Every structure is written in C-alpha cells, then in structure tokens.
Image: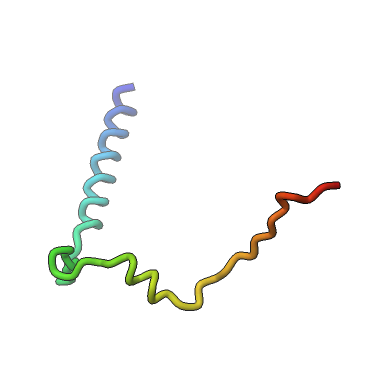
Length: 64
C-alpha cells in the first residue's frame, strides 16, 4: 500500500514539474497592456464585415 502511495506521489511531482517547465516561455514576446491601447468593442463590431447571417422564421401566429 505504501509503495502505491509513494509511486503516485512521485508521479504527481514529476508531472507538475514537467508542466511547470513546459509552461515557461523562453521567447521574448510580450503581451500588450491595456494601458497603452485599449480594445474598443464597439469599434470592432462597427468594422465587422462578411459575418454569417441566420434566417429566422416567426411561427407565432400559425393556426392549424
């Protein structure tokens, strides 16, 4: 029983250390901050073109 717990704990430690090393980036890329040039959602929606449309059929007053 103790061997299973020890093997499981060792596996978890190795998995976490692998994920931590994998998630660390070595590139020089930087994420833009919101203080410099904020994203304006209304401007994005105003400039959107060729968006898909959906046809809507209203069956509110259909009587059989």
